Length: 119
Image 1 (cartoon, one colour):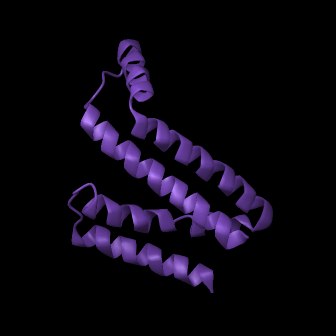
Image 2: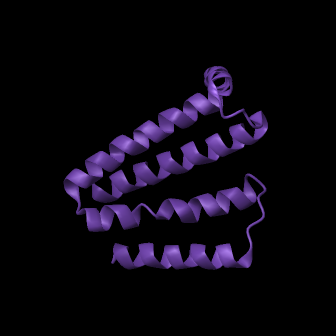
């Protein structure tokens, strides 16, 4: 059950973050004032992928809460770093972002840490 909850949490976070990043890049910048905030909230309501991103993040949140009930925080929080690995890969190949050597090296270090936790 612990691994299932971790997988749900990681998947929800990754789906939410990638959809949010993709849609916000398509939207463009909003002014950091009340009018810009209202425009952003209106935009969120009209974009299905952003609504899906919010739902995915909610699922991730509740899976993390359930994970913390069943596993020590010293496992759950570092294991959740698997999202960084998956998100870096998707940022490069799905979002088309440039990921330099230093970021790939950091991603590999995070992956190694997650693997150490799995044993």
